[in-house]
Length: 235
Ligand code: BJW
Image (cartoon, rainbow, N blue to C red; front, side, top):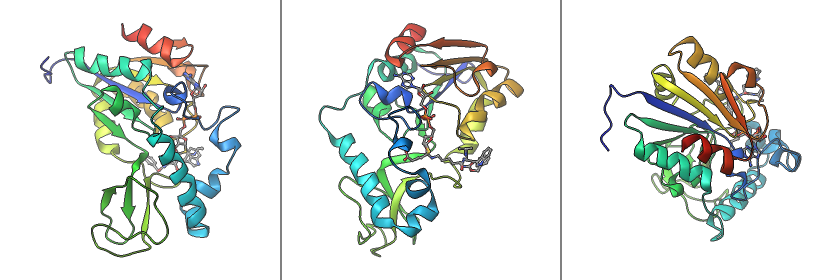
């Protein structure tokens, strides 16, 4: 189906809750990542400067989870990909997740605002590269060859999320803003619903297991596991 600029567009913000039923942990649920490791240690530039080996180990373990052959996208990822294929206007998935389950589920128009587990970045030459195996303190940059300057291509607290200009432009133009599986604790993503209300005035819908921090800002809410509420909403 052809997409044309004059068709109503959809922006979908996703968070860790959409990947939970594929077997990946969320951050703030009872069994979540921040109940097992300290976010100051593994998700800040200061934590990385203090102990790069520990931070590399944390992300290498999560890379290994992505490589596990039993990991697969679930019915919620697949429903959003179906929506992109069948909707006549643009569908943009803005994900806070660093996994690649949207792409594996068939979505093509995906923006990873908090980076990607499968990518690394050189703090020297700033080149971004795809990285399949373990990343370590001594890894050499595939672009400039310098060792010791590689870091995960993820956005830590205090760093600027990626693609913000494109995201705000899409929010300002969207007819529907869908928020899926995110607790609404982390900015700027938590402020997107407010931005839609103030600019495009599009329909706002929250799909989550439970009310998020900003739940009352949404015009419509549907609560339950993503594999149930997302396909039910899309179909
Ligand atoms: C299910 C389910 C199922 C479960 N089905 N649902 C004071 C006030 C305001 C802001 C700040 C402040 N102090 C500091 C800030 C800024 C800071 C921030 O927001 N801090 C807050 C904690 C207060 N933000 C930043 O620093 C960001 N940068 C920034 O602001 O730059 C300046 C700027 C300003 C203006 C414009 C633009 C820029 C950077 C944030 C980086 C976040 N990084 C992390 C780690 C990434 C790497 C990694 O993955 O390791 O990103 S933290 C972590 O939280 C990760 C996530 O993407 C993010 C959001 O979490 P998410 O996805 O919402 O997960 P959970 O666990 O919180 O929620 C899961 C939800 O799913 C729950 O609701 C469940 O109920 C639900 N669920 N099972 C459906 N089966």
